[in-house]
Amino acid sequence: MVVESCRGDVALMEMVDSIQRLGVAYQFQKEIMGVVEKISRSEDEGSCEDRSLHHVSLRFRLLRQHGRDVSP
Image 1: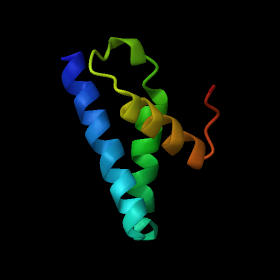
Image 2: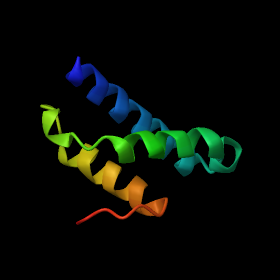
Image 3: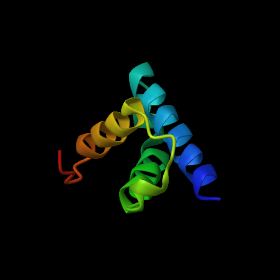
């Protein structure tokens, strides 16, 4: 169940990243902020077995871009 949640979070982060890169993030601000809130609340990062450098760095960048304090 936890792994499924991790995959869902990764898919959401990748979707937000794609929307931002396409330049249409201004149309989805509420949804993007919801995703940022969700990933910032997920403190239990250690439970994901398939954490790749891409996923960790994407989470870090998205949280930093949206003003969250994240330890490097």
